[in-house]
Image (cartoon, rainbow, N blue to C red; front, side, top):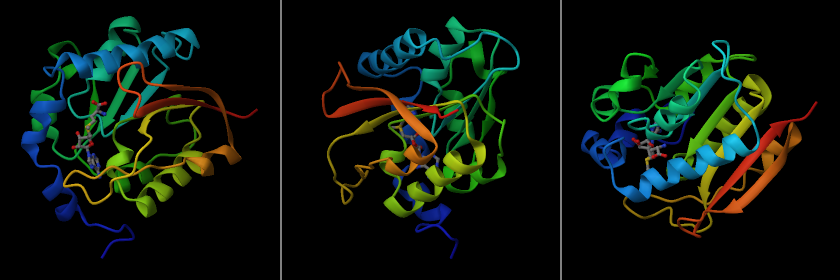
Length: 204
Ligand SMILES: C[S@@+](CC[C@H](N)C(=O)[O-])C[C@H]1O[C@@H](n2cnc3c(N)ncnc32)[C@H](O)[C@@H]1O
């Protein structure tokens, strides 16, 4: 058994590869509106510098819809993503970023541990850690907070708890990140008020 609560096979049973057809670029308007909402916040807080040194990672990115919107606005940056099924995720990724993106077919639990300080300027968790149990999420957040230390951490997460649903929802509090980060923005999603968006910035 790994250090994480569930092993890869158990995780993949919950998120089968067909799930990628629902959450990729070619998905319903509602999810596109979520991506646009995140982009507006990124623009409002001037988080991204459009240069080739700037690195954005989205964990559990599916078909990289959020990253497509970001890349349209900031085409010079580097893009990184992971999810469980690389081939299916890339099938559902827009052609404009398919060859550009550094995509890793690995669970976030193990994927994140290979990165260190200065690897990323911005890490995004959009509707992803909500599906990962409390213990594993704590380890992932701990690694982001203490080891990778991106300048910004942007999350879309949920206000309700339903960990026993077939696709679980975990209401995480993200308080651990506040040891090194300050919360600079918090809002309920305009698209669905069960969801909130928070932006954290590394303290000086
Ligand atoms: C609801 S989708 C969100 C996709 C994208 N982030 C978005 O905002 O639309 C959740 C994603 O998390 C992925 N996922 C679930 N558990 C995972 C894990 N342990 N490691 C990596 N990806 C995982 C699923 O495969 C799915 O693509």
